[in-house]
Image 1 (spheres, one colour):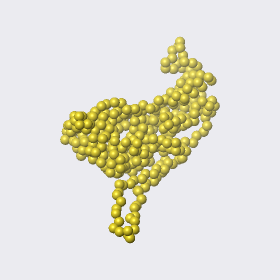
Image 2: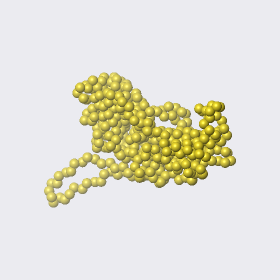
Image 3: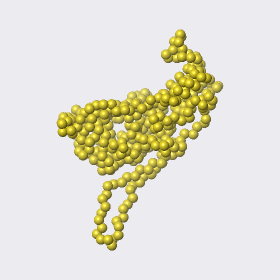
Image 4: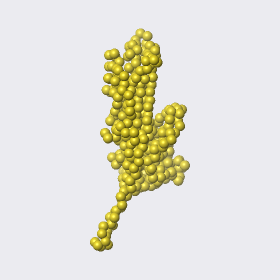
Length: 362
């Protein structure tokens, strides 16, 4: 089956480009030990303060006892995403998109290779968006809520126990001319700095929060002081879907201003949703100061049948971050081939105190 083998091998050697999507999930990094075969994944979160050392009244009193950092340990079961697409061989006898009766791309075997490639393209992208949705929920709520194919929430909510003070709502909506966005952001930045011992470096705006921010008179007054180098607006694209809009000083912190207008469709209703809620602003420490992990659970499976086992890898890594488990199998009775992708990712914010989310609407 030379045409089939050649096309499929070429595809898996040049995996589809998913780099241009996944702005929020790009904050979560994956090391080699994060690709596990385990059913459960351990989460270890350590909180510590910034205490100074007390002086002794005299040497005879002995050393002052110091308590351990607050340690939280738990196990979570990474969710399972499993998608499949089936094609009946009789469908491969029909003209495919892009073909004409005078110029066809080949026989049904060649068409099958195109169908398989298309199926993997679609399913990889869907799972990538699900990982992005996990990251967006972590950033804005500190939890992950999963839904089934009918849109119903699953029983288990992954709660990473963030502090409620990191997810405040403003007292005056930013749509109100009396609002003070700089004061609101500075207050949250100081809270994050106190709890996480790292300066806030990034502010990621929902589209409505950004519009209200730049239209606010107090913000405009600061943005006009470019010669004093207090702030700047200079839009440029950032890889993976975000946009860098400039920077601003929030008290003692110089903060990058970013917008993210990425959207996704729900599986059940196909409704378009924003990854960042329109009125939300996410504040984070610099990515180098964040210990955010994208970890994978194990996926047991059967071996693929011939000839697929020799030309389709059982596992595929994209950008050394996403681990997909692949399978193609045939149902002789139904005269059908099925392409299947399984993935078990979980976004874990180990640095639970180094981010927060401000709700700018009431």
